[in-house]
Length: 144
Image (tube, rainbow, N blue to C red; front, top):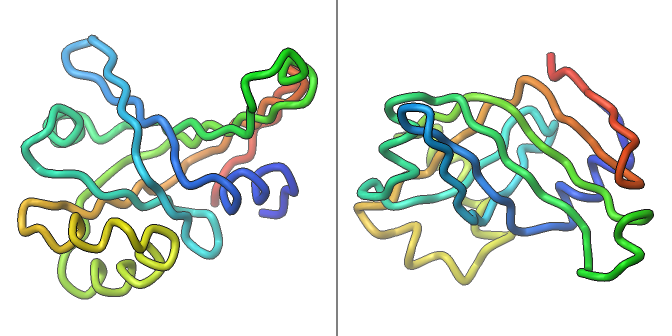
């Protein structure tokens, strides 16, 4: 899966908005994420005693939105937004240990947070990416 806009956003942005839901009520959270090397997964950390974690336990279907806007009028023509749609799960044991170095390479300031025993490292297995550019050009990329 090769897409320049997708790579630019996933490698260039450190934060995304996570969308979960509970009983039909939407919930948005800002998360610090890192992509897998092949972009088939995104990883983020959260404390287990949060609304987002509880929502994902009830319904693992999530979306993450990252973009490159700069809060300028020109963003209408120049900004690119990527929505990753997939399913989230907590990873533990060897899977977690394998993902931690990449996460900390991108977010070294979150080392203490990640080491907190209440902290879950989540993996979102991506089903598709939706890339929107110039405010109306939409491209969907299925993830095998």
